[in-house]
Length: 304
Image (cartoon, rainbow, N blue to C red; front, side):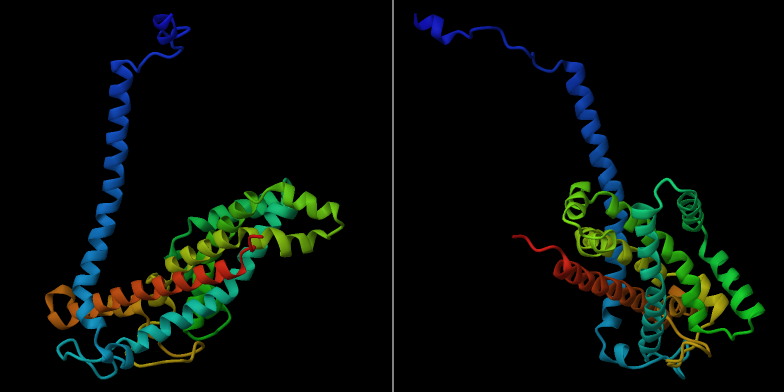
């Protein structure tokens, strides 16, 4: 009786993995792990190089309070205040234009224009803009804003070029985040008699806000590091310029390019400024990203 109870009623339905399948699984695991290492190692290396070579410059109070006005490649000193101001102003003007336009276009493509001819044309144009190089966007703004309309080279012209680069990323991220919002939420709202626009504003967008903010920050991080529009549309100034509509204006990418042109790694003074500007740009993007996370968390739907 005991032997009968100890033995299984029937044979197991599944046998152990064969040697070939185990070998294939192990090979796939190794390949995936190596791929992760190949992706992580360069990122860690870049971050380590930037921090190790730029931390001494960034920790100086002068770096955050002074500009490079009157400084040369052979005289240590000065700071990046002028470049920080220029970068933030250009990014701010760009975001003010790009964020509402990109979000509204994404809403149209998902909520109103799905399957329509205008929706298909808009999607095609967004795909085209996604692959446009920054130098092409800069040349277009130069031909339109400066050569045709007669406006001077300025930081605002740079912002217009960055708008062309930022909008497609925002549209794509907004579109994808709105698509993953459950249709049940929309249908429940419609069943209660809530208009479509209010459903989008009160339910759909808050639900997808975290992903939308992430897309905005990715787009902003991309455009803040662009150099071609700066060289074509405004030039670089070592002095502080708060005027976005006239005059040369400093920026962190422009400062890095200027230091490379002045000697780069071959000169200790320019090398310190170069890596300091690079680390400052990384810090600014990180601070904006953390701030945006808090904003998204604050406006996200509250759990009951």
